[in-house]
View (tube, rainbow, N blue to C red):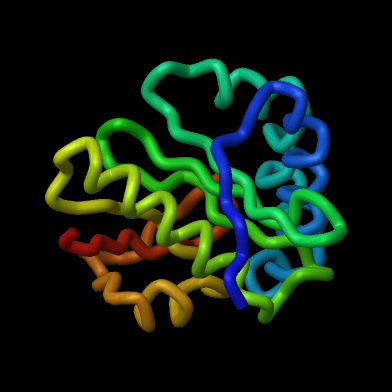
Length: 156
């Protein structure tokens, strides 16, 4: 399925925050185990106000994937090639949303002349990224004080 992806705009912030929160809460249970002490710090900055801040930052490229239900995925890459967000709404899972987001983020990094993109992959996302050419970099480390993430990188 060809999933449309476009640059996010300020009015997208509430829907983007909702996708982020639902994705983390419902799809990343292997990472947080429904433990409020692990889930809380991860969700803390996933608000419409924080998303608006990310959208306004000149070094960020925020994108959204669109399906018939509206915004179904959220992605963000920095001008340094750090992929900070790549999340899909649970209702859109296995419809090509994550792959479309990742392609758009990588294409943006290429357009900036970057030779590599990097990210911190959760347990839930590691196989997805590995299947798309990302390779582990060093040892796993803590994120949000409670999650174990693996640094990964891909040459463009």
